[in-house]
Picture 1 (cartoon, rainbow, N blue to C red):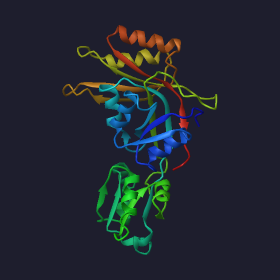
Picture 2 (picture 1 turned 45 degrees about the horizontal axis):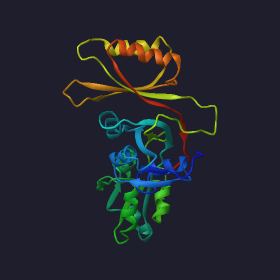
Picture 3 (picture 1 turned 60 degrees about the horizontal axis):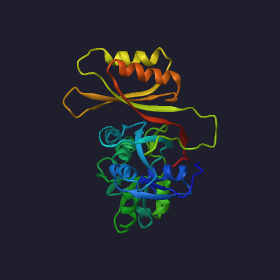
Length: 290
């Protein structure tokens, strides 16, 4: 839990979404401002309308959220001041007026990732039932709540069921029970959120591009980090949007960007023509199960 108070925090809404749960867990005493899109969240920080923005970065099953990564690389200059790790639990919920008839639902609504996370359950339990994609799990719950006359269902978290007065008829319908989502907390300033516990390990996210006319540079990048014993917990490529075969890379390094070894790595990478941008060093915060 964060000690700071009276700050405006943008998050990918609406209220009761998974991003809301993550944001509320980290900023329980601040003014939370729901946004309809990831760029809108990020731009709110850039324009100074809010102090921080909380946006989804990666899901253990579905992979990264490309829009978040691409926007941070191509459009803005922001820093990561914290990351939130949230366990994802999906439930099937219906309007209370349809509880007696829920096994005969005509349509099921949810965010595309949530539908994918429950693929096996939906295939075996509701094969042939139309699956409707919607902007968030919370929006799906809201739609079901506003349609008492329709025998439809939503997939989402317990918070959305409680907020919109729905009945959870099947709990934990996700296919894999180790599913988590990472969220970035973004700021205009390269700082770190205060933490209550001192026994935390720093992580630094970097983005880099390779020289276009040299071979083996990615191997060199990894070697620069390896001989310094700088461990990577993740590395992934994304299109540069300049042509086929052109990519930038994002990597998580389990070290503080101010460490001597990290500073040396940045200098050596620059010397071999690699353009490196650090998004900052931060710590991981866990949220209650949602």
